[in-house]
Length: 438
Image 1 (cartoon, one colour):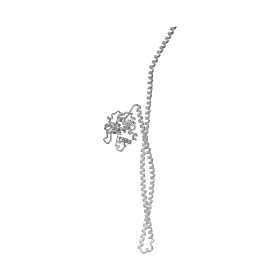
Image 2 (tube, rainbow, N blue to C red; image 1 turned 180 degrees about the horizontal axis):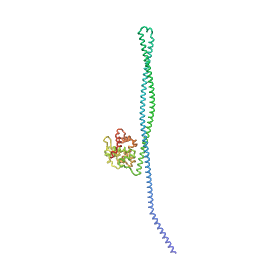
Image 3 (cartoon, rainbow, N blue to C red; image 1 turned 120 degrees about the vertical axis):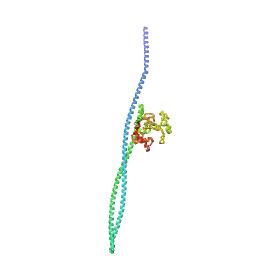
Image 4 (cartoon, rainbow, N blue to C red; image 1 turned 60 degrees about the horizontal axis):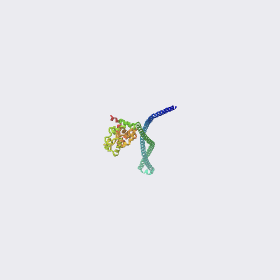
């Protein structure tokens, strides 16, 4: 019995030990799986976060594209309204011109009528004086006739010659009296006629003055309409510039989200892109590029030292080259002009001076996605040119007069008529640049 007990205890002990060993083995295996499961959990978490980021990025891209589309539609509408306002302004200016002509004509009629009235008044004064003289003569004549008719009979019978003389005097006085009476009647008729003409002239003058008052009121109203319409145009231009700036920023944001920037294939492609981004007419850009750099074929043949740039510009030029990892000593810029006094130093296809380029860097980067932008890069250079030209009112509405002014400003900083030749040359090549692409 005692041996059986011992045997049972031994069996139980063995079983317990076996269970303990099995438990340890299982625990060990479980410990091996924990890191793997943890790693799988981390990977699942990373995939989930990556997927969420991609979804968020896609949403941002969609929202940006949608915002660009909406803004471009609004920009189109604003440009159409600006064009309508400019047409209205043109009509108003025509009305002002013709109304002013009518005013000048009416004022001329009034002045002429006043002169005629004054002349008629002088004629009436003359006739009044003449009538007074004739009346005095008539009075004197009547007195003489009275005394002639009242001579004494004794005096008459004293001599035949004296009697004949008296009769002759009486006949003469009678004839003279008839003539004076006729003249007085004629003067009266003339006075009546001139007074009637004067009255008619005053009526004409009154009518013309009334017409002048109406025309002046119309002119005043038209000038008010012109000021109001010009104000609306200015508001539209400001709105258009804001929308274009917004579109440029949105496109830059879209480029960053897509992880790419834009590089043109050739100068025509660069002009098309810059036109799309800024609203500047593509053909106008091509005309500018013909005149400025022969469509990019010649962008300068001098080093910065030979350009005679000012020391401040040289410093900016060096900074630009350093940001782009260029050797500033080897980069080519325009040479000093031979036809007039000035300096060289203009860079790239757009021929921007270093200080001017610095002022446009952020705007260029927001459009092309190149940060920093490169003045010797075709896309950046043409975009810079388009941005500068687009600042001139009317350029984004494709007004030829505005483009001519923008070209003159690009060259000289002024719109002086002495630079008309440059603006006309640019506009010529805007219509004929294809000749140089063969």
